Length: 198
Image (tube, rainbow, N blue to C red; front, side, top):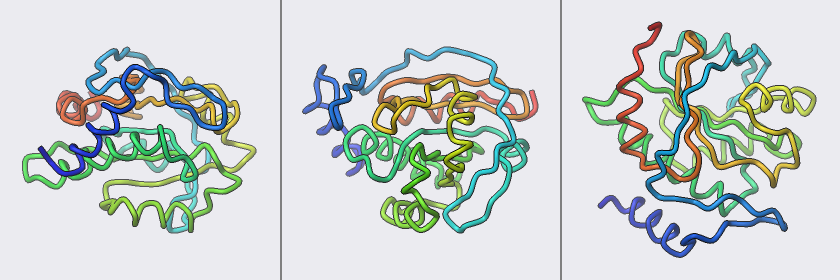
């Protein structure tokens, strides 16, 4: 088992069936092999997002022709649930370095535009040893609620964000909604099934 996978497994074992909480907000239970996913159609808007280099571009313009994308929702000041989300994404990112890996762009979308500046995103990406396939982006405080709504998520306080992944293709609008803490290998398998432009 990979070292990070061992760490993630330990965290999940400690969590058990209990929900993780931060600042009084209770999250849904984290399940290591959650495959309770749903298929849906999402029309994601061209809301401007800024990445860890400070470059700003519309979300749809940036990723509309990227092929398969895996979107996670988090913020850099969150350590418990976001730590597990980052861990899953890091394992997927590592798997994408293999020669037979599918085409897949990872996108970490911050729900905390007030504090997640490009510099904060860059620090987090460096800590996670993120590859060039893993983008870290944030919309403006005004646009973040609309972007979250397009993802089918509530625009409540940052502590109330959900542990969820969206795997799909912006060109087709077809996405899988994957809650909890899924098996990274399962995410890779589903990414292989997504044919860009299909």
